[in-house]
Length: 348
Ligand SMILES: Nc1ncnc2c1ncn2[C@@H]1O[C@H](COP(=O)(O)OP(=O)(O)OP(=O)(O)O)[C@@H](O)[C@H]1O
Image: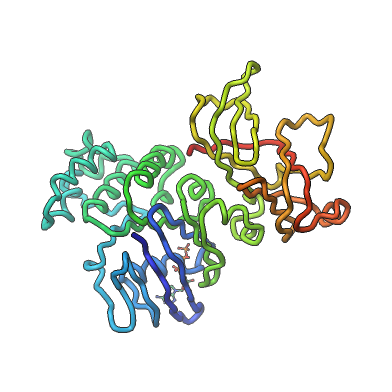
């Protein structure tokens, strides 16, 4: 199951040339305001007819030279920034609305109500719900239309931080339990770090980069698109043991690491966020340092003040000055040590 998108479209001020694939999981469309994210979504949903191209969902052509399916025949569930529920209907009636003509809808209804914990809300009207509850209802309604693709256009943008935190676990559950490609338009790097499996970076109507989230994060050429402060890698690990001093020992492909303060039990899988400005490089094994996490690494790329490192199967970024690159004589293939000052833990 996947979505394949390739289209061109010319607006007076912007030529769009967009191509990417969205597999099962959450594909984040990320880019500055006006880069073409909504236009891309509209082309996929059938709300805009591109000048040329081909858009196919599970091999089913939605748009090409001879085909242009109307939106209602595309099997796309749409979740907007504002939930757009019918105000005069209860939550149950809103949820049932798209499935009125569909077989098997009753079975799906119970499953989706359970998954999104909508049971206690079923008899309420939208005006009495919180923003997060409204969005959960909108997601449930979109899923009950039996979509082959779920499109979420900045679904958290209208929510305050507390409501965002409330709905995030439901979006994660959706990602992990529903085997669908999902497009997620967002400006917010923290949302993308938590939710996305695939990232498509769009700039001025063009795809600047697309790929699995860890690969995009560890690509020095992509760092400027995400914002310099956000440059850094995402590393998978498993909790091994709680040390006598309370520190947590975790196993990564690059070697063991120690974390402070995380309240997690052995066996749990985690993702560690290692920001480029928290990594220092040394050519020799460092001694007498307070940093606990020092891992052997090989330089793979240097670009724009960022050094990409290979640590076994993992990639990491270190922010260094041109002077340090010269002094340490760093180049692809250089063996060195990555001294990691701090990491943050993301739920896996
Ligand atoms: N109907 C239209 N007619 C002419 N130009 C348009 C039209 N729709 C969009 N554009 C142009 O395409 C550009 C991209 O618009 P789009 O809404 O896709 O951007 P976006 O990345 O979704 O932005 P934002 O994050 O602000 O929502 C706009 O800046 C605008 O110049």
